[in-house]
Image (cartoon, rainbow, N blue to C red; front, top):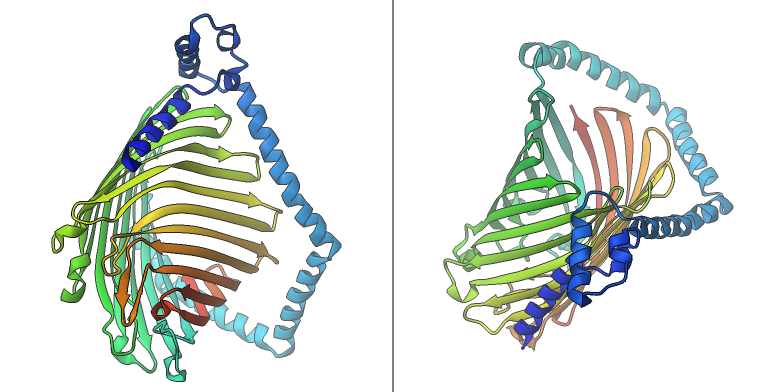
Length: 497
């Protein structure tokens, strides 16, 4: 029954997108005229109008009303901030920090050291590198380095963390990015980013690890046709659950080619994804899979910088070491994406997903959604809000998938040209369908995951940014084996060389 219901909803969403109420096209005299042909004639005129170039005045007005309304409500925050004199407080804070640096002589000592390092780098490496390799080309090579220390109160995320589970980690990440635009109008581009991640434990050095990742992209535009190819490769190790457990080493590789065609105000896209996850340990080999996904998207411009969309995805998971985990899902969504105003962007999609497994009773037939709203509150303040409901592949005992609802928000505030603050929080609920036995506990697992963070960035130079972060993590589960609390304080630096 659930599968048939899902298929009917898929068809319904598609019909709604293609044959939306004629009131949406009230500016078109052909559509708004009296209907003598019943529903079929109505639908045909709407489709004919949709195939014509141009936007729709009714939808433009609706987008403007919503965008102006959102801007107005967010502006109430700035009124409250002005009333509370937040701007004056932030300026006093920054001025106080700067005066503190001056009073203890750090400001001059740091600046002298940075000036010396910068002049030496330009003299002996950066300028010479540019002259020998990059001069006369459009290739941009940007090396970078990130490093720092991280204190964590519960390094293995155990339910009850004894004192010896706190740890100081040392993190080193050298990397390089390459970008090369070419063509008569620079309409083609290839690029890549590579980085290595070195993690060193202070106490538990048997968990030291070196990971690496590579990302590559190619963008090619041919008049109305465009092609995009992305590849992502990650070789790393997930943190162990206890001191005695070995880190879980894994390899992820994903290749995603996309081809699209623009015709008038329509865009049709086709996308294929091949993803592989492989675990080195025989214990986790059953969770290694190959995923092949096919997606088709249809977009139509409804208002300036605002589009309607429909997408359909078929995704198949193949587990070579455990055939009972072989499964697939169908998913269809419809929604909108684009600018509600000059300060507010929105992407919102709703639909249905039907997920089945070949040799197991796990079956999900659920509504899915994802919504992202970004807003520039002021010249100094940016906000980001996101929500989704979806399913994911599970590696928890006999459960093949889990249902996740997640909401998160973040914001950033620029105190001045060198000093920036960041904050945010997230809340997620994961539900596993089948009862499982862990130790003496038998339950249908339900997890509630919460995080909150605050961070500061200070730009000493364009090539040296210092970061200070605090993050709180909490997991509440009806299975106490998955309860934990963790506090993380990190001090690091980012050097875009």
